[in-house]
Amino acid sequence: MRVDRENPNKYFDESDASYEARKIWYAFKDAVLYKDRFFVKHQLLEILSKYVSENIVEIHSKQIFFRARIIDDSCINDHMVYKCFSAPEGERLDISYHNKSNLFKGLTKEASFVPPKNVKVPDGRANPKYIKYLYVSESPTTSLFEVRPFICDAVNIAQIRVNSPLKIANIAVELDLSENKNATVEMYVMRMIQGAFSKPTNNSDDYIPSQIIAEYLKSLGYDGVRYNSSLHFGGVNLTIFNHDKCEAISSQDFRIEDIKLTARAAFGCADNQGDLAYIKDNEPLYLDYENLISTKK
Image (cartoon, rainbow, N blue to C red):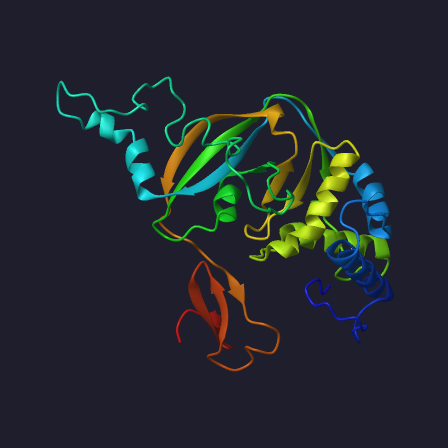
C-alpha cells in the first residue's frame, strides 16, 4: 500500500478499499492541517476508536521499558565508572557514580527521564509543543535505533519502570494487506495511521496528524499508544501520556561501534550476471546464476 504519495487518483493496481482509505486519510490530514485542529470530528477517528477498543494492551506495574539519548563525550567521560577505579591511591575523584548501590552509571535519574519543567520541548510524534510525553521502547536495541546515532557516538540507555497499571491503545497489530482480497477500508485506514506514527520525518508539520490522533486517544482514557518502529525491524515503541506513572530506575552509557544495514535490489534492478542484488549486514552480494548469489564482483 502506498502511504507516502498524496496522489488523489486511483493507481492502476490498487484495490477499491485501499483507494477509499487513502481518500479518508488525505481528508483527515487536510482537516487537521488547514481547518480544525482542536475539535476534530472525522470518520477516521471513528474507525480508530473501534479498532483500538479491540486491541488494548494492559501493562502491569514493574514492567521495564528503555529510553535512549545521545550524549556528548564530556558526558560519557564524567559518567564512566572506570575513572573511579583508575584514580591514584588515596585520591578520590569528584564523581557521584562510585557507589555500587547507585544504579545510574550513565545520566542521572532526572536526566534519564522526561525533561524538567523549566525545559520547553518541541513538537514530537505524539506530543504538541511544550507538552511532555514519555517516549520509550520495548527493547534497548530499538531505543538505540530511535535516536539515530552515528558510529562512535556516545549514547545513554535508561531503564524505565512502570509504577502504576497502564491501558495502552495498541496500533502495532499486524495487518495482512499484501494478498488479502478481503482487506477492508478500515484495515487500510489503520495501516496509514500506523505509518503516521512510524515514518521518520524532520518536518514538525508532519507530526500534526499523529498528534491529533494521540490527543484523541488520550481523551478516550488511554494512558498511551503502542506503535511499530520504522528504524528497527520488529521493534516497538510506546508514548506514555501520564509519565508520572513511570520512573527511571537505572542508566548506562554506551559507545556505538557498528551499524548494520540490509537492503534488497528493487524488482527489475538486478537481472544480469554480476548485478548488485543484495546487501546483507553491510556486505554486498552480487547476482551469480551459477551460485545464485555471490560476494564477489
